[in-house]
Amino acid sequence: MSEGTRPVSRDNTSRETADKPKTWLPPKRLPTFEDVNPDYHYRWVRYEVRGESDHANVLSRVREGYEPVEPEEVGLYNHPTLEDGRFAGTVISGDLMLMKISKDMAEQRTKYYASLTTGLQRTVDQELKESDDELTPISKSVKSGTTTGKPHFRDETD
Image (cartoon, rainbow, N blue to C red; front, side, top):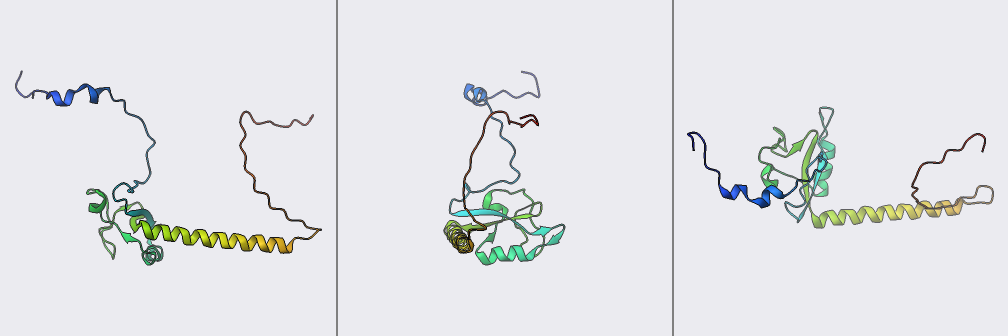
């Protein structure tokens, strides 16, 4: 062995690590943290729009129960953070800041908005049913479908 070179450890050259093919995945624009702490739901929240602070959006999330997340909580020690203000030290990405809420609160929030949506849909359906008459019939048809193959274009001579 010549000077300046180190012996190669056999542990680093095992066949297992050399034979595993790497799979390509598309890059994620924002990291997700559900696996860091399964007791919390993480969400990126807008704190700034075109360089102007969006305090109303952040404070509405705080009133819902969200809390700002610091880098140490999710293992992002060298990630950018807010430098000043009430939420200094919070993880950021562009104009978004990372916030968390307990899974229980997140599920309650989801159920609340689902019931609100269901109630509004019933109200709209009832109003449509009441305003239906013979001259302007209203029918509600909910259908979805898929097609495969080449699109068929009608020719003027058809």
